[in-house]
Length: 325
Ligand code: UD1
Image 1 (cartoon, rainbow, N blue to C red):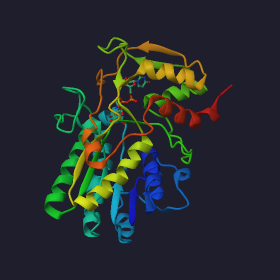
Image 2: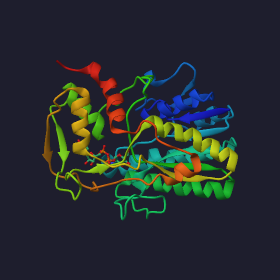
Image 3: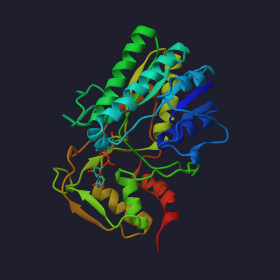
C-alpha cells in the first residue's frame, strides 16, 4: 500500500510517517521543509520537496498514484493566527483546497486530516466528545473547522473519504529516539519546560494559578505523538474496510495540570526548572479533557505512551544533550 504524507517532515508528520513505515507501508513524504526538518526524513521513505501552495508540484507528486494521503501541512500557532489571519487562511484553507482538488483528480482517497481540539473552543462540558458544539476561539481553530466542512462536502460530492482527527495536546517523542528534529521556538508547555531545564530559557511562566482546578493551574489532555501517529494508520485501515468517513477526538482522557507536569519534569530531569506564576494567557480555558470513547470503539485505539512520565522522559531525551552547564 502506498501512502502520501504531506507535511511528513514535521513534528507530528515524522511520527506518522514512522508509524506507517513500521506497519510495512510504502511511504512518500511531501514537505516544503519550512517548519519540517531534513533530519526527520527516513531512508525507507521517499521524499519529494514541494509545497501545497504550488499546484503543479502537488499534481506531479499525486500523479505517482497512492492508496491514501495524510495531510498535516499547516500553520499551527493559535496566537499567531489571531495576528495573521491572511497567512493562516492561505496556508491552511487554500492549501487544503489544493490538496483536495489534486487528490480528487488523481483519485486518491481517503484523506487523513490533522484537525484539532481547537475546533471546539471553550468547553461547555467535560470530557469533550465529538458532538460538543464547535465554536473556535482562535482563527487557527476556525481554519481547521472550515477544512472539516470542506472534507464533508468532498465526501458527499466526490465520494472522497476522510478521517478528521482532532488532536488534543500532542507531546513527547518517539520512545526509540528515531526522530531527530527538534522544534524551533516551541510555543507549547512541555518543550518550553525542557528549554528551561537545559538553560535556553531562564524560567517557566505558569499562566495563572487561580483557575477553578485542583491546584489552580490549567489542566490539559496530553497525548503522546506516537499514540496519535498509530491512530492515523488505524483510521486509514478503518476507512478502507468500512468505506465511510470518520471524525474522532484523540486524547488520553486524563487531565494533567501545569504544576503536576512541572513537578514530574523536575524529578525526571533532575533539573531545577525555575518557574513563576504570571497572569493567565488570553483565551486559555481552565480545563480541556477529551472523551476518546469513539476512537476506542471504532479504531480500537488505546494510548500506550500518554502517561506523564513517558511524555516527559521521551521529550527530555531530545533536550538533555543541549544542557548549558
Ligand atoms: C495549544 C493550542 C491549541 C492546539 C493545542 C494542541 C494555543 C493557545 N493553543 O493548546 O490551539 O489545539 O495546542 O496542539 O496555542 N502554559 C503555561 N506556560 C507556558 C505555556 C503553556 O503555563 O509557557 C500552560 C497553558 O496555559 C495551558 C497548558 O500550559 O494551560 C498547555 O498550553 P499549550 O502547550 O500552549 O497548549 P494549549 O494552549 O492547551
